[in-house]
Image (cartoon, rainbow, N blue to C red; front, side, top):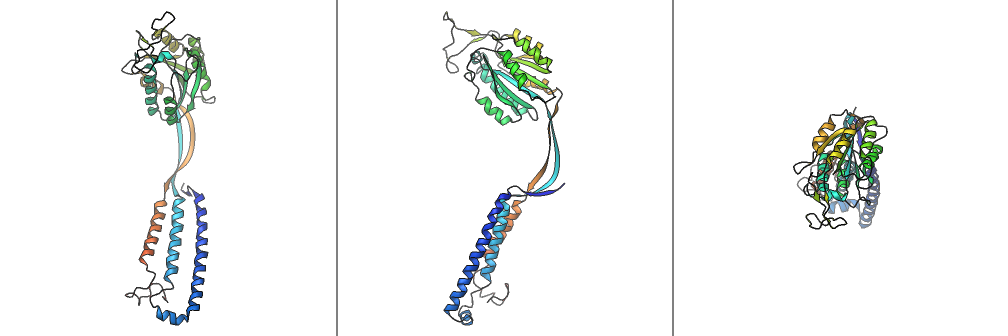
Length: 346
């Protein structure tokens, strides 16, 4: 089905200036005629000024008005619809729950656990096409950082703003993050849903395994990625690379270690997989490869026309008319005086 439209029809209001120019031109011509009549006999004046043309100014004015009309039409952006498409998008819904507790600042994963996780998520958004993505941050509490969406550009912007100060209460409430993720999926979406928890696994707040089990009962698979190394690392209090570390009540440096047992239990209860990150890779892409195998459902369906812009044609017409105007002199050419190119050139 073919169709024609103007992308910005509101610019046609500019055509109202053409009648204004026409009125001004008519007034100008009337005043000129009156002045000539006051000056003397029309036939005598014509003999005294043989090179003056009465028709050429009208022709040049007409060319300018046509050029202006074509220019305004080009600005309105005429478009021709070449075909009607039916676009059906299929995918899954994926929510990533990212640990932002202070222990994620440990530098056993370079540059640190949190920064490395953020980079991995950013790269994942580049692979997404039709899947919906949501982002949750958690420490002692969990918050929705990005509601589930297909706007991957916004996802990267929200991701850049994440730091350990974004959640006011410290701790690692993995269970709360999973429960919030369960509530954050689109209610009427019947397709595959997956949760990826990225954390060091030091859960001290709630029953994360129980939360993962409840999620699976609602057909939401829970995967975990362990950020950190088994031997652990101290938690810097300053900028990355700082030698000022978090200490306990006895002034001993606190070493945060990856709790693989906890993360494995969560993934098993949630029917998902557990992957341990290292300095070579986080493993998020590998996990997403598994998620991609899940059954995809229709996220949306829409019809739209593909339109091709036609404004260059109108710009060309306007340019040609202006060029012709420049080629037409206000006065008669003495070499072409005998040629009546524009009718009776009085």
